[in-house]
Image 1 (cartoon, rainbow, N blue to C red):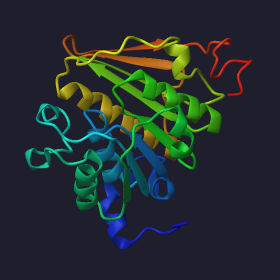
Image 2: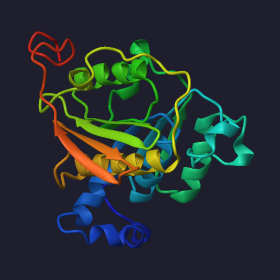
Image 3: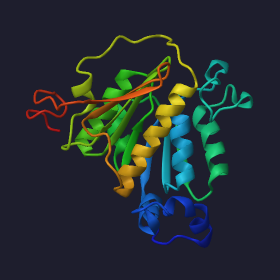
Length: 250
C-alpha cells in the first residue's frame, strides 16, 4: 500500500488539498484507491481525465470498441489520429501522459453478466460510463453483489442524468429503471452534455473515496442543457427489486 505523497505529488495536488476536510488524508485515500471506468466515450472521457488529474492511484479502463470519426464531437480522449485504434489504447496513452503517478490499465472487452463480477471485484468505486442498459444492468448486479459503489450516468441530446448507487444504503439502478428500455441504434448527443455529466460522475467518485460531501444516494440528478436547469428527484429503494430488494441476495 502506498502510504506517502512525494514532493511532486504535494505540489501537483496542492490546490485540492486546500479544500476543507480534504488535505493530505484525502489525497492519500485517492492515491490508494482503485476506480474502474466502464466506457471510454463521451462520459468516460471526462471521468477518466478528471480522476487521473485528481490522483486516483489505479484506474482500470474498460471498452471493446475502436475510435470512429463520428465519436470525435464528444469523446475528447480520442483525436483524429486515433481513428481505428482501440479506445483503451488511445485513452491509456493520453492519461499516462497527463499524470504518470496514476497506474492506468485497459481491458478491451464487452461487459456482460458473465464477466462483470471479476471486472469490478477489488474496486473501490465503479463508474458506469456506458451507453446501453444491458451493460449497466450487469454492472449494477455485480456492484450490489460485491457491495461496491456505482456511479451511474446517462445522456441523450442535451439531457443527462446521474445517480450514485451504494449497496445497502439506497436504491440500485434497477429500482430506478425496473425493466430493460428498448435499445436505440444511434441517439443524438451534443458533446458538452456528456462533458457535464462525466465531470459530475468524477466528482461523485472522488467524494465516495474521500468521504467528503453528500453523494447522490437515493437521488437522481436531471440536467436539461437547453433550459440550463438541474433538478434532483428522490428515488426510493424497491423492496421487491430482484437485485437489491429484501428477497434478493444483494
